[in-house]
Amino acid sequence: MGKIAGVLFALAGFVILMGITTAESFYPGYNLHSSYISWLGATPPPNIIIKQPSATIFDLSMVFAGILILAGGIFFYRRYGNKILFAPILFMGLGTLGVGLFPASHASIHPLIAGIAFAAGGIAGILSYRKTTAPFRYLALVLGLVTLGFLILGILDPKILSPLGIGGAERWVAYPITIWLILFGGYLMGPRPTSKASKIKSKR
Image: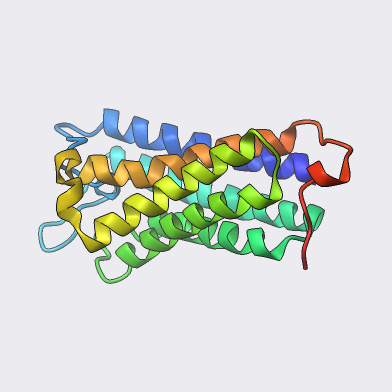
């Protein structure tokens, strides 16, 4: 069960990264500095712009990745029974799925869904620090803190991140947790240590 969860998480991270990259490559004039990631699917109203095939690639990638995360979370919970870490993984999966189903043209719901995915992913990275072993646990903590730190800064004082542009700042939120997904998947696929202290802890 644990190894299956690892495969699904790693695939989800791969799909997110390559889905974004591929959608960018098909989007004429897309600017990493001044464009949100979600604009690959659609820009918000009143001037909704949808570029194909970028929109389809992006939306389907997010939907597929969200399903993979949710499935991985189920296998993870069945193997380890850890509700504390399962909860943010679940919300991360639901948020990622929602980003694909409700692109930025759905202005009333999209920002909330994306925010849930980002926040839940950052929390999952931080919580995995307590459930895994070194050296991965330290990488997980850093990646989770980077995501939450940039997310909070972007909400409280966007001017601090203005040199990165809205696109660059958002990638500092989205990419660390995507990298965490891939690394956590690899961690779960690896051989499990036999000592009690080094195992992923279960807590119901």
